Amino acid sequence: MSHGLVKRLSLCLCSALLVASCAKQNKQAFYNTGIIYCSESNPVTFNPQLDTSSTTSDASSHQLYDRLLDFDPESGRIVPSLASSWLVSDDGLTYAFQLRKDVWFHTTKYFTPSRNFNADDVIFSIDRWRLTSHPYHYISGGRYPYFESIGLAQNIAAVERINGYRVEITLKRRDSSFLANLATDFAVILSEEYATQLSQAGTPSKIDELPIGTGPFKFESYRKDHFIKYRRHDNYWRSSLSTAEDDTAPPDNNRESEVRVDDQNQAFGNNTPNDGEQTTVEQLIFDITPRSSLRLAKLMTGECDATAFPAQTELEVIRAKDDLILAEKPGLNIGFWAFNTQRPPFDNPDVRRALAAAIDKNTLLEAVYFDSAIRAKTLLPAASWAFQNDADDTAYNPVLARKLLADAGIETGFSMTIWAMPVERAYNPNATKMAELIQRYLRDVGVEATIVSYDWTTFRRHLREGLHDSVLIGWSADNGDPDNFYRPLLSCGAIPSGTNRAMWCNQDYDRLINDALETDDIEARKAIYRQVNRLLYERLPLVPIAHAYRYQAYRTELEGIKINPFGGVRFGGVKKAL
Image 1: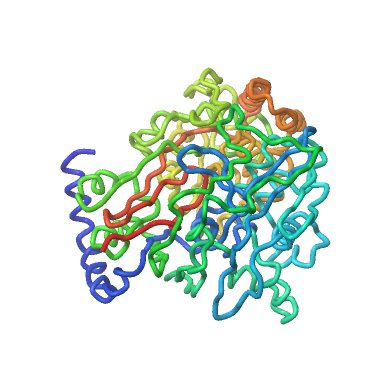
Image 2 (image 1 turned 90 degrees about the vertical axis):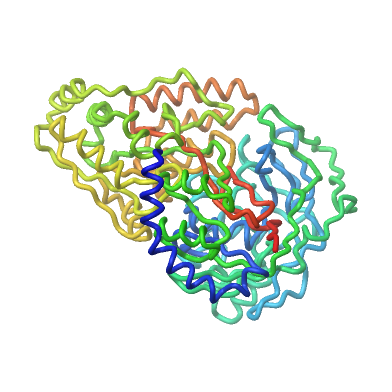
């Protein structure tokens, strides 16, 4: 970015800076005891089981809850969390989890726990999304999009309580991504005691509105379009964790063998939790600020300590400030253009190939991502162990595009819609601008495109209803397993959940991705995914566009903040220098 452009952008921020500076004067007392995070929009819910958006994950998953397992954000390894250790049977079907003791749920003005975390909470949390007969399954709508998209419920045969601190999960068939799925943002553990209390009071839906978890912060209040307030969880289990706990010894079971560190660099059975998770700040506030320029202004004046999704045009401004830090890391994500394959003529692969050939992806990358993304050939980024560098990729060829359209009977002047998501994401920081560029390319081959957008909640609901012709959107991985891209984005089972934006169902594709889960052999899985990539290139339900870098902007006063490549932002363990 030129010096002149940085200067002009800085001048444009002046009015926003003045507003933010005045507000800052009224909040200085809070800054000494808390962290303010400038969030871009409202969460859909405070239970990430119910929603796959990063906004919901940011506001809930790592602030309010814990999971049985976690990902180490630096190494990508699976590490213990509420499960202190685990074993896998020799046939790969039974997983035994030893649970951590002395873990307390939140005490709030609306709930006081009488016991600590145990096996009943694990069973309740899993059975809620996997069993339609569970009393809480249909509370808050009965949709669990992530778990539906990967078909996990259908593969679990049983979840059994062996004792108060041991749970066994039995699968119907091998699933090499199972442990990774238990470490995602969506596999949070809820309080069974709180659920029972709410059910008895006749208010079960409050479990998702007034959350109770075991995480580093507890919920205090929420005002839509304004803020979310959290308070420190003083009894957070990581704050006083000893490395010599006596409850981490794996259970003795002759049918099982200790699991190992495999070729995916995932540590199975490691008894060491994440270090440095002690929460020192008393309060956490999510300041809901949709405009990127205002988020930056608040960050620069100190009204916010960290901000979500800095715009590409703002990165150099942030880098130039001595009191700001811009952390960056290659992202496990994919930005794409998906076609609604259940709507003619987009059900025709030749039409989809024509539209793909009509656009120049390199220009899209330069205009929208600047230098912060790489061109995508497949769904998988280079950080994935199954990345295929020599995969086929559709080249810009407007002559071929016009021919394919003509051969398919698409006449000049054909009209379609391009839905552009209204929020900024790392995988697509400016969907509207990208849609405008694609609109021009399509006009060159005789196609008239109309750009459509709504507020984020309405946008996602209409996508699930299949009202779009095509959509510019993307996906950020919830774990490092390739299945976390292939299954949620394009499997038949992911259509009802809404994560399959192409609404594409192909039996050969489903068979291949299922075959890949039946083996732990990395090379065998890589070979299968090469077949998957070839099938997607030939059928083209979506056009992979970019794998973007992830950015986190924050003030130098914050210590311990890290970019989490596997999901939502984490403020547990983040300190603030006074």
